[in-house]
Image 1: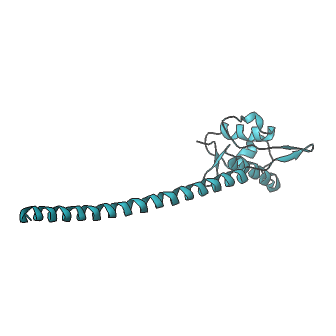
Image 2: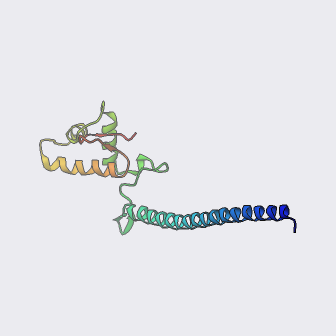
Image 3: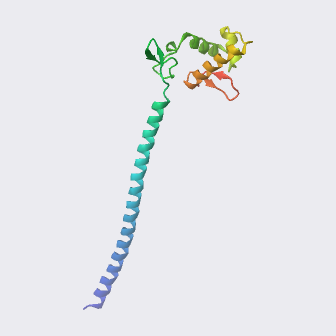
Length: 150
């Protein structure tokens, strides 16, 4: 047998063994990454389902009027106009809009004609303002003043 040919075969076998080892390592990495992606997909599906459930449960519960379910203060969405709000809430929104800037509850009360010297008249107004904030119609600043949304 030709020693030169035997040396070339041995060298080629060594190259192929090294290549096989590299490919086996890459295959292991590919399989591990594919497994991670499968897990990530499952997590994403679960999180999406949970978010959908939370959004559905976060939707305000409708009130009862005349035995029928109605949303008294709907969330602000592109299809819902201010005219869908009860008249007293429309007046509150108009007062906040007409103000020169962010306003306190007392100022809104003065603008819509509430006796602001009586605390029991002011607290229900504050509750309405907060409800409008919760539904996206107004924005409450950290200092407690109210303004229109951005």
